[in-house]
Amino acid sequence: STVADAQARIAKNVQLKEGYRLEWSGEFGALVEAKKRLAIIVPLSLLLIMMLLYSLFNSVRDSLLALAGIPFAACGGILGLYVFGLNFSVSAAVGFISLFGVSAMDGILLVSYIRRRLDEGFGKDEAIIGSAQARMRQIFMTGFSACIGLVPAAFSTGIGSQVQQPLACVIVGGMLLSPICSLLVIPTLARLVMPTV
Image (cartoon, rainbow, N blue to C red):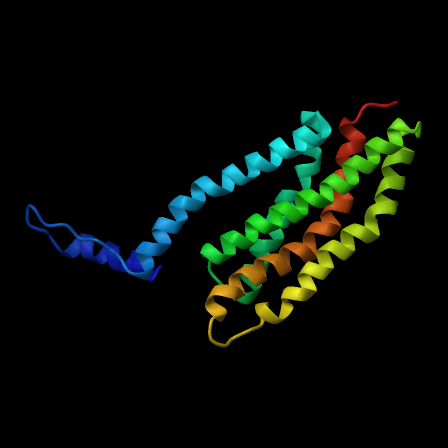
């Protein structure tokens, strides 16, 4: 925001002669370049996750169902940045990418177990509720172990904390919210979209 304010003031008050140009570099320039790369990497990573899920389930419906927890993980990451008063940065973006992977793993656990129970002949409601109950411990342990492991980095203020703190805050926030939402949203959506056996 400081650089944006300076750019606006300079654009308003400084007229450059022909042949001259103004370039903003240093840490701000590196951030702009990194954001351009991330604008390609983040959608590419989501596409790659989707392709891997499709190769696992052979179903677009089940793949999207497994990805249904990602928006809640992202909301948790944004909430983590907000609570700690941090801005979005490159390390925060890396945290979001790892959040997407863990959230997709939670979805895979649930959807694969629901499908297995449906194949075993359980009714749809029974398969979904039983799967959520059976996988709840694994999903919470996955999320909370990642969360607890990064709590010291989220509260750190020493040398190098500017790099590690945004990544840790994103993962801590996302891992607190994602398991709960995954266990509520994915079974609900599965009940709506999965066929009755």
